[in-house]
Image (cartoon, rainbow, N blue to C red; front, side):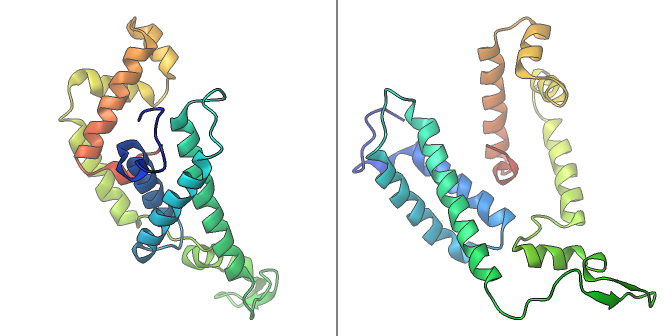
Length: 199
């Protein structure tokens, strides 16, 4: 993305498009928003970035982190506002209310809630079921075996080491290790695992 990004070419910018679509996928995967909300969220994020570009000062920082921050904050506000609206509904019951458990004991309601009830109460959806998560682990393990040995080693090291530690251990510059990590991320995205990658 060039520093000359303007409101007129914002929609054509690959970086902006990628950031917005990735952040929207994350929000849909981790909240009660659905795929039906996707187009609205994308459009609102573009509008927010366009508006925020007016206050961007290149002397203060680089435009890419600025755009990522704008999109993340905007989507965070959307989720917060929707959750506030949900909490304003009537018919709420305190979780400290005493109820009978399956064992016929008197306990607080919060102690008998199922995970799904907790998720619904908090306005979130579980991204994956246990079975789906297990399938994902198997798919990831199989895919990682197809990577070059250097990348497999780097991913093993990354589980317990920082980029700086890996750089020192391998005797290569940190920028090289970061380049390798970006290549690995790109390979994961190409294989369809991008919705599980963190920013």
